[in-house]
Amino acid sequence: MTSVAALLAAARQRIPASEARLLLGHLLGRSAAWLEAHRDDETSIDSEFSTLVGRRAAGEPVAYLVGVREFYGRDYSVTPDVLIPRPETELLVDIAKAKVGAGPSQADARPPVGGSELGLRAWGGTVVGAGGTARILDLGTGSGCLAVTLALELSRARVVAADLSPAALAVARTNAQRLGAVVECIESDWFAALPAQRFDLIVANPPYVAAGDPHLEMDDLRFEPAGALTDHADGLSALRRIVVEAPDWLADGGWLFLEHGYDQAVAVAELLAAAGFVAIEQYRDLAGIVRVSGGRRIMASGRSCA
Image (cartoon, rainbow, N blue to C red; front, side, top):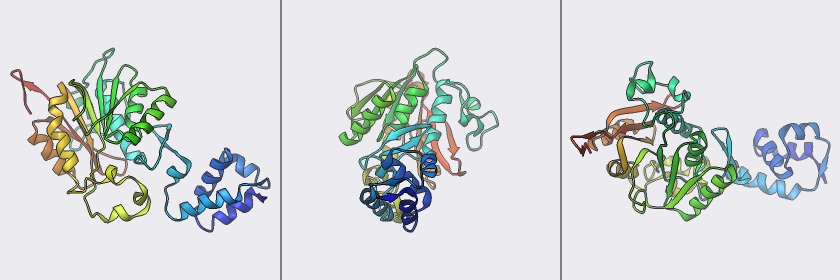
């Protein structure tokens, strides 16, 4: 038996104190406040805690160790089969909410790069008015954090989540069920296996790290699924494929928005323009990096401009 204080003190020699408290709280099913108030309590989980601390000290992500990561104010289950949700990806939710007409969102305070203070509304407004039903597709859903969040934030939306990985889809389904979201999950290589239909909005956070990028061998990325991080090519192949194929799946006036790398904004804007998208918009994340690019599909003379 060892006291809470002694366990935390020993762990702090190997990992940050905040992570030690998180791991111990996970094992005990207690909050950080409880741990502080019960520092002298003794526990019998010395071995289990030491194992978790060792795995974290070796670089394994905390999210995988505790099986949970917060996204847009909700806890999502995560496993090594899925990418760990990132705060910057919440920008896609903000944009989607504004485009679908869910009222003001954080994105309204962040106008498109080069845009005016009117932000989103200066660039074409919503795709579905109040009371309408938006059809939304999340490509490469992974944990389902985007699809499930959109289904919960946009109660009138019909959300489809696609992923090539059956294991990832299992995690997405678990999150949808646990959080009470209605999401249709489909195993598909991007658009390949989807039933014929049109969407008002398509969002995607595809693999965009180029093969050989040194970041793939650093920190948490070493433990995340490679296929969710890199396209094993130039970093643009997945983005390129989505942009080229998306017009065939978008309704007239529908939008496509993609998360991409810190240095890919120009390339993605060029891909969108080449595919016939108009009203191209780009948004910065909270770090000031252009992280999301998108455009609108407009029919011209009965034909798609794509």
